[in-house]
Image 1: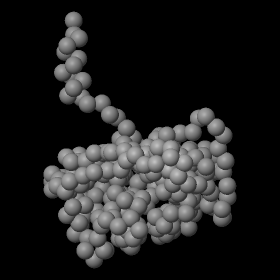
Image 2 (image 1 turned 120 degrees about the vertical axis):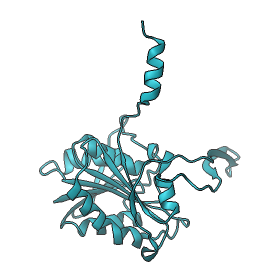
Image 3 (image 1 turned 90 degrees about the horizontal axis):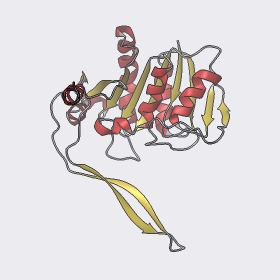
Image 4 (image 1 turned 30 degrees about the vertical axis):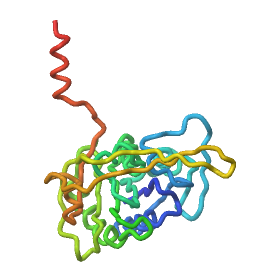
Length: 252
């Protein structure tokens, strides 16, 4: 089995090293194509206005000066075109990708691009309270077994699997559940204005939120309860109830 690894945190991230270790538990044929720099929050952005440069940094390991989607596309269509991967793994992201995160996540974008290219794809993220010290061992310990079970079971070709590991040590994980995408009740994005040394204004985006107990059966609740959350995702964003209701307005 050939596995392609990528991420959005960049080629030098600790999470990518963890992902490569996970992949090598499954096969010896592991390749990596990852962004040159941190591309968090890029979603499915693809570079169309300038050429992309690929650099080989080690055997079977490449970096691209572009987005996560660029990496998945170039990895499959160019770098591995002689034998395309059987599986794409993305992550392990430094921080959870749940609820609204999934529409902005570059980690999940890699998986979606792999899916559109006909390759089973899985996104992995490690929840953490301390960005400088995520509990990588939790993802590394559980991911290989979970991935094996998922591959044995299979899933629809238009679906990607989003796996989030709780912010707990491996011995404190309370289980693995398949859940739906949740929704945060108390979260907002804000822009903080600052001034540089030349007295020019610039801005940093940040997040504000309030603690809450999420509903049962969601990715948020699973992590809250110390469980590993697996969520099947797809690209169809149609709200069928609204489609039906609004369609009746224009009938006749």
